Image: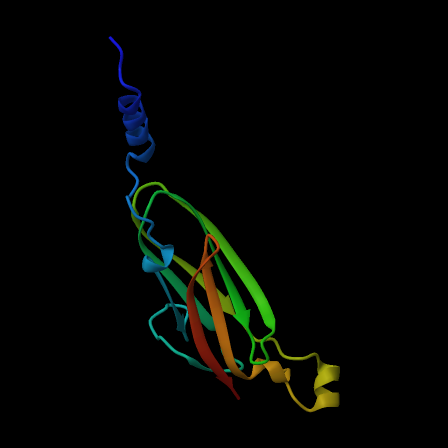
Length: 148
């Protein structure tokens, strides 16, 4: 008995798409990021003093099984990339996952402070942004202000 070729094609198409959604869902619909003023991640904030550590919590809900990399880019008030951080993790069963990041502003060295009269570089103050990516997809842009 001959099996029509379209039946074979249909069967293999079914096998290839089994357990996969029929639409492409972005990871940004699963994830959000927020800035906090405390390491316990209880006080959301977007205004920080230059001597205060900035905390970022990235929470993803209902992620499909797979390996993920979260990257953050911390952009200073002049548009310069101050630091970039990354975290890779694997989800073995669909569940929520949180990753935590932080940034401390470092003062100038003693000699530079004496010469310039300021404790921190000028770009440490002002409006900052944090770009958050998961597997290369931009999922969030957070804004914060840094003051004296």
